[in-house]
Length: 470
Image (cartoon, rainbow, N blue to C red):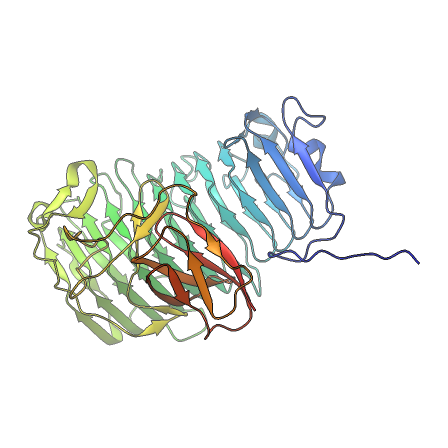
């Protein structure tokens, strides 16, 4: 009798005979539109590094796909075919399948008849986007109303999103009603035509360790969360430039608290910078349940008030507030460097928090790093206020930057070991993105005996590793 062996993969449920399809100028298929009809559930589409101009819209109906750029980041540049699609014009990629991963691709210049052309239009559940770039689309990512859905976006850049033909309604990224939106290690900036750098109607938002900034364009709010729910904003640089059309940086619930209660906004260890001569920093809908604001820098004008609106519970402390950006001792605010100088009054001025929200402790262990990355945040004494910790002269920061650090064994029992790493901070995430353990790698080992069996992601300052806990 012939035996059939099944191979178990770490991520997702992938058929044994999954196919890798190759797209590129020297391949059999030179555009994604030529291969999409042949792709099956669980397949991989590798797109060679090149610029692909004026391909028709591609609708991916299949589940468990991996769509990735190889040999560099290929640029998918929309043209007249998508712009003039009167039947079903939505954008460059329409992701209708579930559990799709998009990796290392650039999406550019998507415009459609309805003025909401997207680099990625999400219609299926549980999209994961990593190491991508979205340049000058009417919408970078546009996510529809999808039940039982988590969307994760990380290590990606969004810029120049918006539509001059329909000002104020298109954004760098726009998430409609889903369960959970996780946005981390990204750089979203310079939305145009009064668009937002980030807008999300998700019930739960986890927005951590990003740079979200208007620098020179005419945008609206930097972050807009119009329907309430639970939102965690932690470890971000959030900036409003002098040309912004809206004087408010962060809005919450302002189109109605229609998401599932509670309606709670947690704002922890962010650096807010307002370079307008007018403005306010946070505006919440009257009747919100909780506004929790601790360990933040608020630098710049607050002529409209620091906070606008009334929540049932306001818990605010250990924030640094000054109308003059120059007074905060930033390294170079003209060049958007908001790391703190050693003499800054924010040093050791924060309060250490133990509260957990949406599976994350309200104590940042990472810091955003340009461009679209992160580094560990070692805390000595009390935590510093703002998105960045001031480095100590005796801090140990000699983690290898390359691939010479090895994780073993894998699968693991009660301990994980690292070669060439010690005295560095780490965090362990579940595969749905929740942070479940963090600490310091002591003498090259981590105790993981308390973890349940399963697959996890461990992050250090320069690298990520998947591992299996037995």
